[in-house]
Length: 308
Ligand SMILES: Nc1nc2c(ncn2[C@@H]2O[C@H](COP(=O)(O)OP(=O)(O)OP(=O)(O)O)[C@@H](O)[C@H]2O)c(=O)[nH]1
Ligand SMILES: [Mg+2]
Ligand SMILES: [Zn+2]
Picture (cartoon, protein in one colour):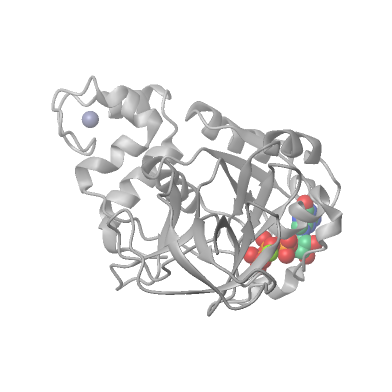
């Protein structure tokens, strides 16, 4: 028979699908080729996908995914610097929590802004979780929060180890599918463990993360929290190649810059050298943070081929 369900785990060669009709999990393979939204992807399916699968009544193995439903949204990163292909991290998300930390490790503004641009491009609502607030001064926190409040983003402060901010995150997740993403070692799994101790996710040793390439979480997995609440833990990401973005387009995905760009003299203004550029005026006045403007310039300069 054919059933429909939610893809909750990607094992590489097989997938785990939770049936909508009976809540059971089925291990599935795929048949044929799937391509959606006209993007080339390294992975045909991702967690969060809604799929039809063929299964035997009494066997939860040997099922076959036969169809993928249209994605409401998805979040991707480019798989390598040379590749034109994208890797889909997850799809059909209500919330993306970008977890960052200002110390051990330090997340750069450029990384954050690349991530935010990706969320804007793919229309995924994003909230910044500033974790490890126990490790930094109030001044550092305030300075950071000011930059992103001004840009129009929600910032939640938390400390997974001291269980601060966890209730607020819990409320934001109610009835939603939420993804946790960010650099390796920022505390994604630790936050999830604070929210749902029963998941008991593996957490890394801080010192391990100074060695490049050390990832504690190695594949994305979706967990059910309540009736309609799910969360996705993902492996840490080092960097982002932005996909399919022309130079003139980048500013559209910085909401704070975009607001002022409507007043620029030229409608294809790149806000770098053009006369009567209202964006640069707003930066001078302090209405746009210099940190954000600098990220914008870096993304422009790097073009679309930069991957870090
Ligand atoms: N001081 C402090 N340490 C924290 C906090 N949150 C997490 N850590 C520590 O940071 C280290 C890494 O945490 P993880 O939860 O494994 O990080 P991750 O983001 O899941 O890492 P990957 O799975 O590799 O992507 C662990 O040693 C945690 O104990 C925090 O709020 N404060
Ligand atoms: Mg992890
Ligand atoms: Zn301009």
